[in-house]
Image (cartoon, rainbow, N blue to C red; front, top):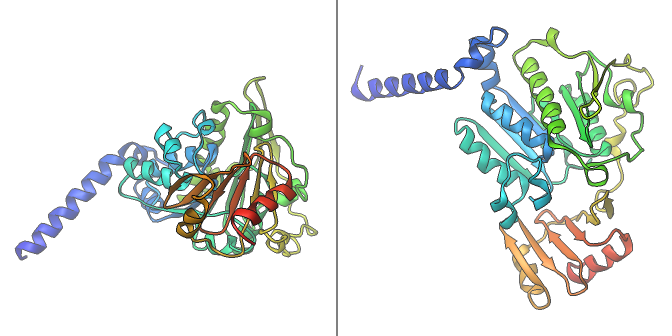
Length: 354
């Protein structure tokens, strides 16, 4: 063996020793062991929504050694996030960092041996299949049932296990949906048209977030190591303030369900994502663009009349009228300070252009 080959072998042995030391306690857990750890390290997992739930899930899975984490979120870090979104700090607020960019920075410091793929994007019917392509598992870190049903449709169309979680106020819910083995989220919720409470309307305490996201993370580990028989079989619901817990059996797959029965996947045929929508409880209207936007060109244009904050991922403009625009390269614009769709569209047309 020549010197270079010996050095390479020694380097590989050192790397393996470091790996074994890092994951030693996890591998001592018999249901995971060495073989399970190898499967975890070979996995690709998508987390959609990097808010409260998503940051806890990502923290657990990064520390567990999931080989590739694809993290998807449309938003940036705000001060109100810091109470419960564990990967962010005040510097992220000051720098107006997109959540996935801030999360990637933190996760790479936690575990430099994994790949983290941040995607600053609003998940829509037009891009969901592409953004989730190749995932072995999809975890729900979102805050609305419209997006959850879209994830559900993509996962059941492509045979990807989907782990649902939700937390608001002191209440939490979690369930695991596996195509071909369980019913789907649409069987449980129906159309999901009811808006319900959100963290922006009813508030939330951080312990319920940690509990629900940790339950999602452990179900992910079970699936990744092939321990399907240990999977939670029902919908777990809890209220940690009033000390109530309910474990409800999932319904049988419905032959008339548009997703898992009829395989029509209605959320993948949803309305145009470019139409303005009000973000519940945030006094914000999102307008999705059909075209990308050149932030440098807009920065030059808006500097004549607006106070600007910018980074490579977004441009924030304080408008003379009092509202604020947050503009993303993919064409999305958040109009903050109004819930009036017509006014938001008017400000968009005035400052961004039709």
